[in-house]
Length: 477
Image (cartoon, rainbow, N blue to C red; front, side, top):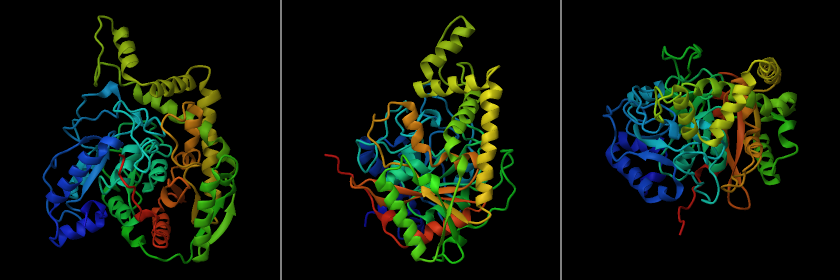
């Protein structure tokens, strides 16, 4: 038995039954990273031993290793968001989710690669090099949480944390064939997450199945007293939704997500999955989300504006890189020129322009108004359905370097962005493979703070199929 192929729940059970020791599990995964990650590059840093002492029995998952996206603060460890401008910067505190993980007794295996400051959909913009898709290392794993998704898919770690601003958990989950869950905005504290778009960012999970997903959400969700946007809506026990029961669920299928631009193999796989759900007593209802066509433009104005505001703190004075000069303006300019990559600069320029005098009303304020229309579309639809089913991405994983045009890259998130604008929970789960053997993802979207509905539907679907149990063969000779 290769213990690296066991799920987090299976590993935890063996620890409790004293059939495996947490130290041995940690070393097995650390050894597997050392052996295989040279071809994938999913980790920025992998620890050779646990970085803190865990207490036996702290939670159901006590002793299980986990990986953390490199934009989530871990006290005493480097936090650089895979950007040259923050290389060498050590976090002075733990993010709330890290405090919760430590209290639950999970062992942090290391930090994962990502697009610089989460700006990207392919994990090609990292200062630590490109992460490759373990199913085909000539292809991208998606982004920006590509390192976390690739590591989970390759069985280098049982599960991982990522962040999702416009699809950065779900799109790589789709490309890598794992379960990527973005909770409702305000469900999980953002304290200690390096901000990209503060009204859009959400920490979430990358797992192999919904049992691990529910357990990890139980750990990281809930109040902390630091994040002012955190909701006081009661956090349920998400494990109660792990039941094979479709009865009473109505799923809406938006016509706008199956029109021009979708790969035929992706469309067929998702439609087959919908038919399977229909055969198992899920009521399927066609719906319309008419303002979806404006989501890309709306998102990139709002997200870039917030990114421009958030990134102004990286100036060569307080954090990370500083290019020496006797002139203060030169320090700012030269540090940012050397520290930020091309995509980060593009987002800063776009956001600064949208917020500038004379353009604020024409762009940023108008985008906020369209955002409200997108939110109203979802609100109206959810009067009649419990969940919404869509593809996660219009394509499977594309080749490294294939999308050199920024707009074509941005369009890979076209099906995920609207849920961030609306603050809704959503999950990507595997529903098939294309003729190249690449995973295809399906997305379930739920009502705000109704994560249970999509966990229930996802768990039921995974028990009808074998897709989430398939793993890539890591033979790259």
